[in-house]
Image (cartoon, rainbow, N blue to C red):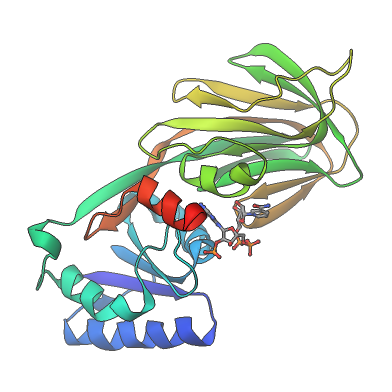
Length: 267
Ligand code: NAP
């Protein structure tokens, strides 16, 4: 098995990373930074975002596993003291509750950014946010090429189902099960008056729909794609849709999404 480990860089994550390499060598796993089959993220959900973007060009060929060294995560579901068990399961020496490893595939968002200076395509695992640098933003939102609303406010968040528990949740968006192929559009502090009228609630677009966000004034914007910040001062529009490709996670044991939601937010 070809593998790669990406850790958060704190002492515990580095130590676990070293432990993983040692045990993996004993099982004959091959460390491969270029074309791993499995990428192990050790840290938190934020570390998984880094791992995802590090291997963004090889997503269809990789399965991810997350080990958390802080609180329980959504992408990182193995505990710090479970590395030996994880290695055993990865090597096939042991199977949890007689279950075979399963691949869970989660939807991603494809983002086309059109600027006066050029066009870029990006993929998000959690979300895209569009915010103003100098204050409120003005944007026209079209759904499937028809005008939907004129937005004025702090910003717009477009999240994946697995990203729905992150920034989207903080702005009142719904939690969406990752088996639902959809993207969620949520407002960040919209201003409502006679000129600017928005829906006020978040909405889900299915896989075959798309939305376009047109910049409607000269404005300096900050786009965030997961943990990445992209300042843009010449935006024309952004198109978002559910991506064709998905991210794969190897599940050596079941850990249902709603259990993770309960553990993370309700205790
Ligand atoms: P960060 O500001 O250092 O961490 C943000 C927090 O979001 C961390 O606690 C992280 O968990 C958690 N998180 C990341 N993905 C998640 C998910 N899918 N479900 C639930 N929680 C999640 O930033 P970062 O570590 O570079 O991560 C960037 C992400 O942070 C963005 O994609 C955005 O979703 C999120 N964020 C949230 C807010 C907010 O809620 N107000 C503000 C800014 C950014 P770990 O501690 O396990 O890494």
